[in-house]
Image (cartoon, rainbow, N blue to C red; front, side):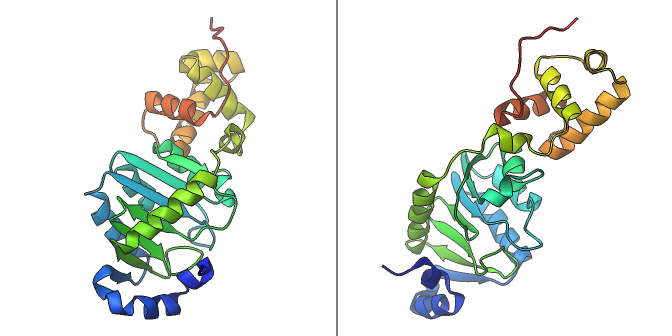
Length: 234
């Protein structure tokens, strides 16, 4: 069986796919990748993605790409490398956008598969800055099979990975918010002003990509940010 490094070598890939140009397109850089992904996301029912997180530009959450994927179809699955589970990471941002996320323990080459009809594959092992290939069916089907193999071997992010980087005060505020406390009740329980609580909530909304307390509470609960306790509010 041909090794994965051979399969994704850009020079050999161009030679291998040369007789099948009707199935292959080339995207020269990240802006071109993002535009093509936006086009594909408008007409699919599912998208599967793998993101590596290496390289200076894509080492943290790629928010434009995540926003596109969040609106793509009904099934949205994302594989991330273990280095993307740290604070302010791709995994955390993806969970906040209601993508199903798993962590793969080995290096990942960035890849997106749309309904097994199209696949977008990075030419660089680190990120999308070096451009990508667009594969159409039937070639895209092999990418879907590779994704399914890695997805089955991946694990769900732990609550500990989601909590990493949150301060003790933020965790206290989250716990009370999930119990249904108001800003004033939270302030009284942890001994700070209501303004401080509002500032903490604003920080959490920015971190988890929400614009309302209800959406923030929902996403925190889904992410397992804290273990909630039985309410003991005054």
